[in-house]
Length: 79
Image (cartoon, rainbow, N blue to C red; front, side, top):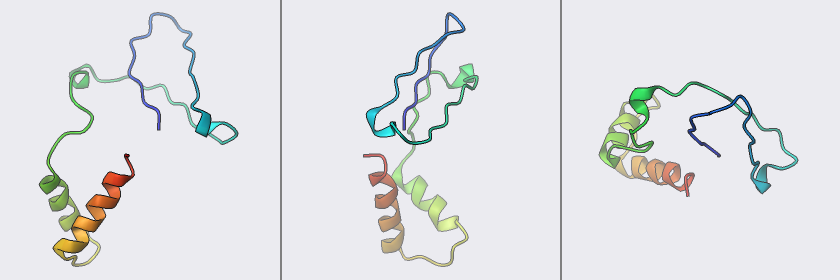
């Protein structure tokens, strides 16, 4: 995934497409970015916060081991 936050000075902006996206369909979005989030890290919080979210997710009862496995899978997607 490619994400870049910019402050455009003109209406034209050139986007460099990563090699792995060539010959595939991609979606390019242009959205306003809230000023109050400009200095907020994209990833914040603790693993325990994510564990609590997963525990509350309505997909049946999961053991602590299953929740840890799910967290590791989600984390590995970002590597």
